[in-house]
Length: 144
Image 1 (tube, rainbow, N blue to C red):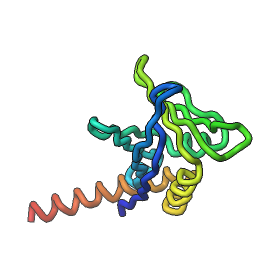
Image 2: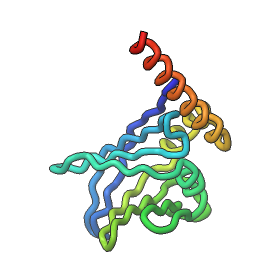
Image 3: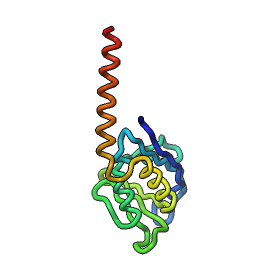
Image 4: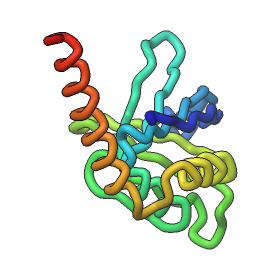
């Protein structure tokens, strides 16, 4: 019952005000972790880096500034849904990415079709019960 939604989006990695470059970013959503989205950044010369954060943060951040602490998502222009900034921070180090909103909205729409927003809890409980049931079945088969 573990299903997922994936997409690849090109984002600008903003190194400084004068320097940025485009990188592929893999977006992934899995029913096994229905509250989170994962973004894997493929930076040149480095191993891919994956960040997981709340799906609702990404949904809300498309339309208004959202997030506290390590992850912040905000529209570039408050009255436009053209682009968003995604700021990731660890300690004093931070990375800033700029993305067109359209592919993010398309990805989020696909996640909503898989698990409607607000129904994540029932799915998480179902997966936990399924895993427990499978463990019992396998234990019984091993004992028999």
